Image (cartoon, rainbow, N blue to C red; front, side, top):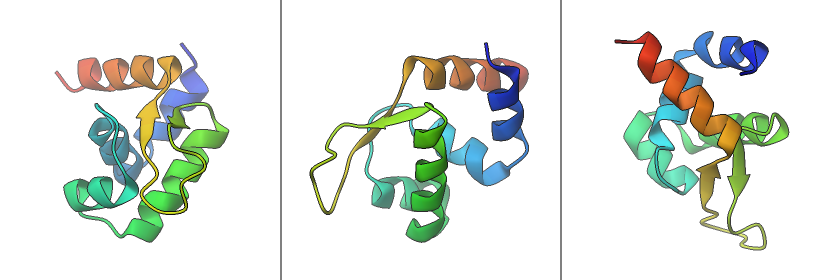
Amino acid sequence: MDWELYSFIVRSDRRKGILVSLNKPKTPTEISKEVKVSVAHVSRTLKEFSKKGIIECLTPKAKVGRIYQLTAEGKILLEMLKNSEK
């Protein structure tokens, strides 16, 4: 478990919301509607998550409607977040 990554997630309600939203593969637009933040904020957060190895893009060649899912590390972070909120 990477505690630095966990700290990075829990410091921001937006990051927590986006992480929870990615419980299944989604597009940035779907995440935006679910979390109620702009697509620009979602895209910026997804870029941060990707650089940190939390998510991966399933359709990297697509210009529009890319689909993202959690990596193994992202799934661990999601479980830790869910367990801390119990």
